[in-house]
Image (cartoon, rainbow, N blue to C red; front, side, top):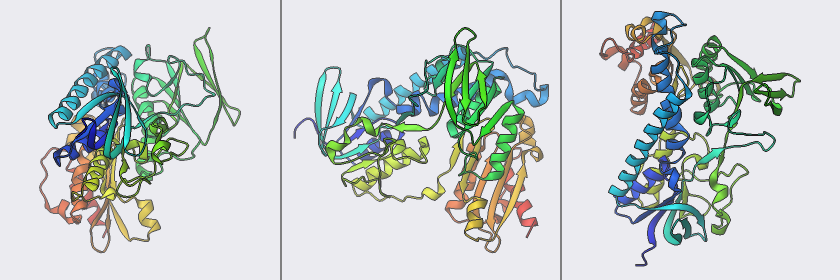
Length: 462
């Protein structure tokens, strides 16, 4: 066997690439993985999920946010929380995660090539490494090359005052005020982080509504809390021009409606550009859309059946958690291993402050499908545990079928929402009813108790 011949070649070492490679290796296949040296672990580890969630945790700890309920809104923890505090924490976590991933791949016998990958034909990948070009031949290929921040050519990015989301952790100091263009998941997360640090944020988006895939009541609660922290929303507005005044150290944004907004810095967070456009996919008979994304079927196969794609490069939902599962499922499918795919039960975690998590159906979808449902609500203010955590504003909402009492969806806003969502996810996946929550015993005091409170509230309405 030629040294450079493999059962599977994976392009990209983010969540989809890692799990796809490891799954194939565990099935006894010969696997190679190609990624740029500085990107082991992908965007998830270096510029996306891990850095932003590390920043979030650091803000909670360093600003004393969690205990402001007890000491008043002016309580500032152990003094100022500077950008250097945040980037120090982030960098040490990135270094550790990178090593964990590298060790995991090696332990499973995955051969790692550090370099830039491009397709030469539908079975051959050329890896440009430091020691020269290597041609790798694969029976199957998994494209998991991720995304980069989308950039508007008309915006004069300078990495200091006008930044994209890759650059924000390296900022020099906290601006007093900040414009964020783009109110998707990433824009909202950073808006809440900066607002929590005391920065006045103006959030601009062309769309008239926030997070259209999330329950409206939960989104309204988030918007209310962000406004309380000093965030201004400019929805349904388009930015037409951005410029700076270096003398005054200000950034200006003009909107199509004629408004002019100024701040100390501007963060551009309008979507992501998939890296499919950098792989020369035409050489393998594939094409990408204008955003660099690659089309796949339900089994993650592209138009060329032995070439698969998974993770952010295939688009929504573009979460680290869903990407891991997509990579694993792609490997299972290509090598004939059994796999079950239940995307309707994937939970969503949005790490704003306060955080949001949701699984299953929304009220909007159930109404459109004419399903007779009932709602049970638990306000965090009723839970002893949330008082201890200093969160009086959170809530858990469950939706269930009026006739069968089957659980249909769970939507949470508040501390640890992304942790406790999994209880609802488990009940949904085995088709349980809302009575499970009524009849089971939860530890006290916990946030998980919110399920029992919400179930009783819902059952009272029947």
